[in-house]
Length: 168
Image (cartoon, rainbow, N blue to C red; front, side, top):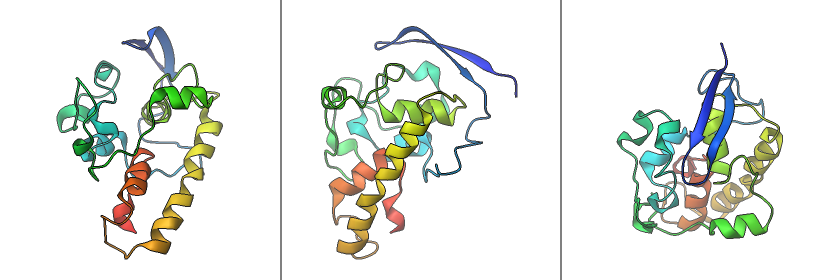
């Protein structure tokens, strides 16, 4: 595949450039096995619909055709599990978890990674994704399989990290 240069101009980045060097949805890190694509996540409902309302030009239009979005403010009822499972971006910045090239955080990294960008932050982000499995263990330990309203905040948090808790 011939690398494609992407130039980003949105509310959080101006003239940021990166290369897409892999085919979309392919050639992931061997330990990174997300259960949902960004398009599936947006369709299900994540981050109260507020995420990515100003940066759609960077990604395929079909991702947003059935996405649950709220350009004005976060609306938790748009989340698949109908609950708030997010910390504000300021919290993530204070913890030092935001990489400067992905100022919106992990999901922005995942969208760009899914589309073929590979970068120096990949290893760290894959480790963070793997750390979310502790929530899977809690759901399996405390919930009857198929009871989607058991631990909805943990389930919504897992959804934000491309895990599909409907399967356990």
